[in-house]
Length: 279
Ligand code: PMP
Image (cartoon, rainbow, N blue to C red; front, side, top):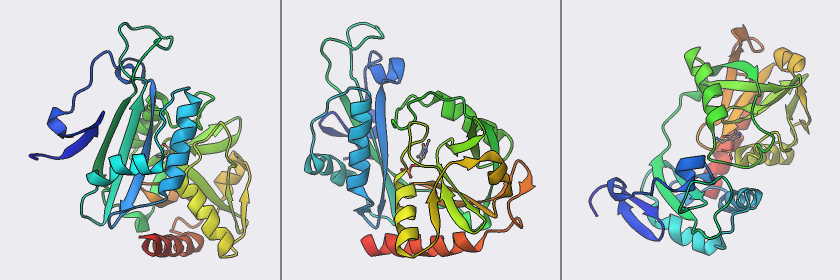
């Protein structure tokens, strides 16, 4: 097949030939959910956890797609290409309706789209800059919805200030990044906010929590007050495509001594070992 193959509603097509209707509710309303699943050396990373979250997201928007793990794998596997680090982007929308109406259509067939892309290398060892912004998103942040306008506007404000990410503050507490989860080292303890409707339950976050526990590092899943975030000796941002990013300045102030910290060095090593072990 000429060009890059993507999956759309049962077919593998060159990217340029994959088309959806303008009446697709994903296009009209952002009425859909998605997943981003990394693959290292051709092996999907934490596949079951990603599919479990996908099912939770589908349930969260009352969209029924009855595919089991093997059926999802049958869709995804042929898209994987050679290479050290790739990711599968998987999107499901409520499909095409006859007319534009907010309420669910009586009948519609979900649109299922998947593609594979390379994970761009990222110089995380140097650390990144971040800003804080007011978390003005909705109350269903645990759903991985394609409706990302709030997150986009927040991330762009960070980019406008030459920063990698915006850390969001709600009622005096850090929730997460615009497209990442947040960790902080506070008085020697690794802290991350507990899962709730205010954050996306990150798969990278879960891997880090498991690695910290199995390596006897002190960790707490606890709300992080903005004042404590500002005093933290380390701050990290985590996601499937960026892995674990150490933040060295927050709102132009140094985090700790303004260098990548020792707890990050340790977790980075554990995370890379874990990736290799499961690939
Ligand atoms: N929170 C938000 C808002 C995200 O968009 C993401 C993913 N980009 C994450 C957290 C991290 O989730 P994961 O580790 O599963 O990629």
